[in-house]
Length: 296
Image 1: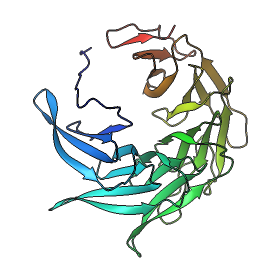
Image 2: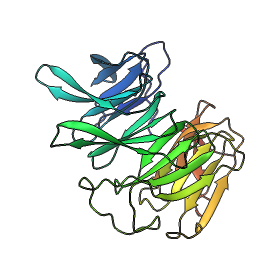
Image 3: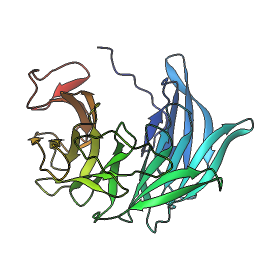
């Protein structure tokens, strides 16, 4: 496996970052702006700066197909940035929240994006062609604390959220006129907006730092402040999960995770290293390689 690539961009904390689909453009949050870096040789060079928020930018995401950029901030707004002949053109999106926006992600279809916040709501935003603006609808119940992470299902309808109330939840974010009716899945068949398709509590009552659907969308993983990784396999609508498995570790808390295959997850966090989490049902042994280690 190749050695990790290290790029020192500046001497300040980075709240969030996002790569373009070809990995040649890197968007990095810095205070109340976003810096765009372009690959040059073996590193990245500053190409542009997006200024539009008046408070700290908390999250950024680049749409893989269109290249549009969405940002959110402590100023309680989101901005959609589109390239134009004169540079990047921002469009303000009113999220209708009274606390800071914390996390933003495009749906796979790129017709919507979701914004978590400290207002105990998730703003699902979509573009209204008739009025030529972005509109937001709120996912509210039963969220009881700040949203820390979001992840879209491959069908662009289901949305997973991790929050500071120690829960990971799966919601329907179906928007009539925007989304096509999704195929039935273990998460449910009839999916009107704000349907709670799953609600799962961390055993230790810790903040849920990150959530991620498996590549197929048929399983959900989440990591919490007790350094555990929990995997949920749903069995069907209004049915208890087929299985819930929790992998405990001796690491410091993980803050992010991603599925490598349907049987393997990589997590990273406050231990300053990444580690491979083979699922209990997997026949693969824990892997120890140069870039990450097994969670033991």
